[in-house]
Image (cartoon, rainbow, N blue to C red):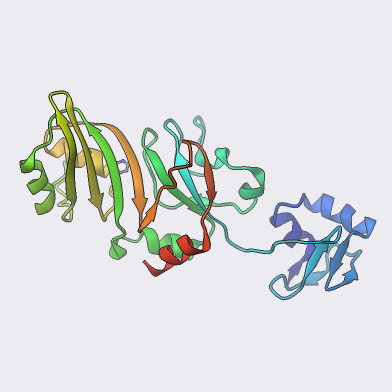
Length: 238
Ligand code: URA
């Protein structure tokens, strides 16, 4: 059971003060009965709550897919830079979502945001080996030797030996290469450091896939949407 004003304001329908005035006006109904007490205890999973005759959509968790833009931090707070949370509408911010893992400030692409701590934990815990697929532009020509090195496990600058990674060369010219790489870990700056280990530099990095989920190609950088039920089941079953 939760307070009626807390349930309604957590869903983004207004502040607790707003809810108090809705109740006073007699526009809130719980299971068909007008409720004037904004502090009434209600089970939001069982009761039908209406405001102005319209049933509110109760949910505890939200799951968002964002195409993260360049220059934005994957965190909930930052003292100087804009964060991915700043890009959300208030109606989604009220759920207090957080990013699932991190992308660097200059990395773009698929970032999940949720307030479901358990799913977040399952997706980022090292033991689950969730596939992450990145598209990247590299400053030098990538060759089959690099593909083999990625397959054998790259050793990073701190001595950590990465798991096997699948490296595909998409195109190659004298100015560098376009590649796709699939990793299952999430070490700090991992893709960039893997290429540094073979004496190359990542000049553009975009995450295209996370845990079997594909970045929606209709999302412009900075845009986001809720996951569909199918996408959520896919993530849960991963
Ligand atoms: N690897 C990186 O180097 N940066 C990212 O943002 C993600 C993976």
